[in-house]
Picture: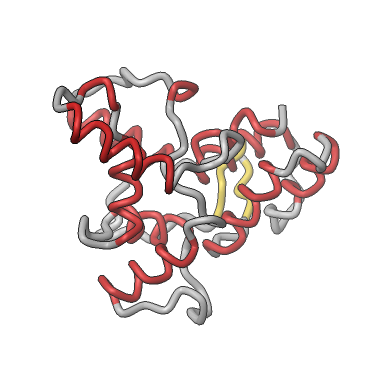
Length: 191
């Protein structure tokens, strides 16, 4: 898939069936919030997931698997892996959340405004994949990218004691709750 000349996907291929889906970025942020909500049981989560299909799939399990791939942009990730010759060497379960759409909203909003002049609180529609690509492409000078950078630092790799203390203090001040869910976790969230 080459997004320079192909459209962002709006349907999922499930077996030999094409299922239209909701694609606005707000809906997927809402989905991640719902999957993260411990008060919503597995059955309710499955019902919520079904609302993302604009036509009822014949094989719901396979459709949800394809939706999981859509949320994580698996098709683009697979293409990148094939083109670069790189394999997956990071265990998804080991990834710690580096941002929260809910808690980091002010910084994400500001980053989009700062870098792109886009007010994501007022934009009528933005495809989930395009939103994620713009989010990933935010400059390092934005507050959200600074937060992500500091959250990702492994303190054990910092030799200078004063620098380690400084970064540790920053990490404590911007720490996310342990239960925060990212799009990487969606596949396991309702099982």
